Structure formats: structure tokens, C-alpha cells
Amino acid sequence: MSKHPSTKPPRQLDDTDKQILAHLYRDARLTNKDIATAVGLAPSTCLERIKRLQTEGVLKSSRAEVDFNALGGHIQAMISVRMSEHNRETFDRFKHDLLPLPEVISLYHMGGETDFFVHVSVSDSHHLRDFVFNAITTRGEVNHVETSLVYDYDTSETLPRFD
Image (cartoon, rainbow, N blue to C red; front, side):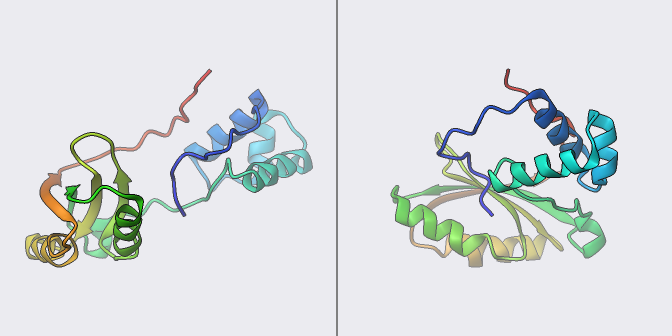
């Protein structure tokens, strides 16, 4: 599922919706009962709100955070890609082709000099080299590729606020 911002303006979320989202953002494994207690709602009301947030596309998905190292992904890298062609069809095809690859964790369409950042997890340096050559540099629309190793990363558990 795409993570890009919605093109339609969302309805105004109230503080309770934002509190529910903050709890789920921190830990998507929380039960509805735990969330309801934390935000001061009846469980049935809380569940209705969560379902509405899902239906409206505010709450897009729930995923497990996996330790890729445990799966054999001992190297992570960010691959910056500059395209020679700048049109929607080329960019959509690039995303469509790369996202299903098992090495790809995430793909970011960027503004500025770099068109894409491709976050990958691979078993070793040979796997990384082969992935870059086979999946990226062989593509005619790719003009420049630069690979940077990821030593460590952390993800915030705090939901951003915009008010």
C-alpha cells in the first residue's frame, strides 16, 4: 500500500482520534480495550472510531517491526537513484518493478537531485552489489546510482502533531 499523502483533505480529527492514533502508532498490538481505557471511551465506541479511521484511510495498516538481521539481512543500505527521464509513467514503472523485490524495505520518491531512495536489506556485500547491478543500474531510465550503508537506525514511537 502506498504511503504517499492523500490528495483529498481529511476530515478534522478531534483530540480523541489523535490519542487513539498515537497509542496505535506507538504499539499496534494494543487491544481495543486497552486503547479505550487509555483514551477514556467505552470499548464499543473506541472500536467504532478505529473502524472509521480505517475506512477514511487515516489509519492505513498495521505491520510488525521485524529484525531483518534475524532473517539473514545483515546489511542495510540506502540507494539513491537519479532518473534520466522525468515523467509519471517512468516513475510509476520504477516503483512498480522495485517494491515487490524481497530486498526492498521501502522506496521514497524524492524532490531535488535524487529521484528515489531505495531502502534495502541484503545478506552480504555481494548480494548488495548484485542487487544494485541487476535491479537498478541495468534499467535504461536510471542515470546515476549511489549506495550508502546503514549502520543503525531508529524509528520514533511518537506520532507527529501538526496543530
